[in-house]
Image 1 (cartoon, one colour):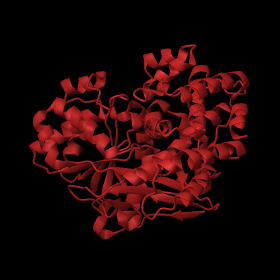
Image 2 (cartoon, rainbow, N blue to C red; image 1 turned 90 degrees about the horizontal axis):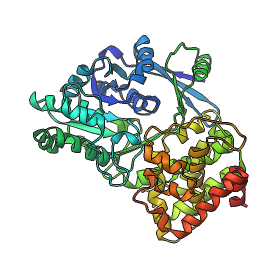
Image 3 (cartoon, rainbow, N blue to C red; image 1 turned 180 degrees about the vertical axis):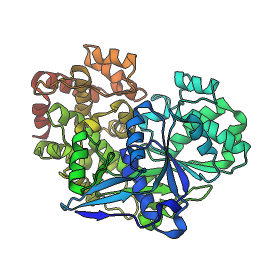
Length: 478
């Protein structure tokens, strides 16, 4: 194991980036790249001020503050060698529940040139059918009526931008780092809609003073359990209350549209481009979609770790067929990218025993993931009259996962779906399996309009219930 400490003087680092959502992925990805770029003396104005907005963030905030905001990042190599980095790029940490005014003032601070976001796919508060911002949301309405005491990310940013405008502190870039197609466009639509309802003058100011680049992010980063904390500290010899671990692959592609400047991230491996579309389409359609394809069937088959599911030959062939037969014809490779090599690396990454990602993490929040990772290509497959076997099996598995909450071996489990509505639950509970195709994540897709899809899906739903997920998967493969 190699231990790598930073060599810059942390006390000389100033903050130029405000990041909202200090979760494991952010600490393994954006902090990793920024920690590296701070080694260059002319880049030391780009430290990160982290912002946590949820009551559930209290433990993370407490643990990081207890160790001067530093933490260890274990990068698990596919070659069997791990590297442990000490990350020092997180220079400030504000908990909005404890000090909301500090968040607002930091957004307005002229030293902050970039706001980065990891607020999850569902965090942008967009209607899954229309794509429009949901102004009627209770928390959104609270923030519109009480701009000085916000509770949502939109309220905090809007009030901070309003004060930034009043003080003439200049423009700023809002950079989404969430797994969404055209995530910058999505962020712009959400924040612009809120701010238009909040302050029309501010909305006009935003047009000339705020940019929203699209970006593509990639690094498998599992959740960290209490057992993982012990294991990681034993391996590193450290006493870290908030360690993170991840795979050795990392990628970050960003459209170079920063109105107030940016770090020279290209010095440490970030790729800048005029258009991120081909990169994000490849990643969302192959990596994220394959993760979703693997998640519910493998969980129902009793697997709780991704690498163990990848020891199942049927599962590996299922994923390979999905990538090769279903997705490759629909996804043009970005320039200088070998798609066959990319797919092979994905299989290696999923199979990495040293990462051993949780299947439950992949199952989390399917309501937000299906419209982003699965539905766009499924609609193309329906239109092109392609084989719909694998996506139909996936949707049937998702229904069984949500409805019965018992796997093939009779083990019960809890479902984590934060954006599930009351209407969704009625559709899940309905005895008619076709009712499930009206779930909020499928709205606008009209899956019922494809007789071919409906026939496959209903047969798979019946078979999974009667004989189990594993035997049905085997019948697909064989």
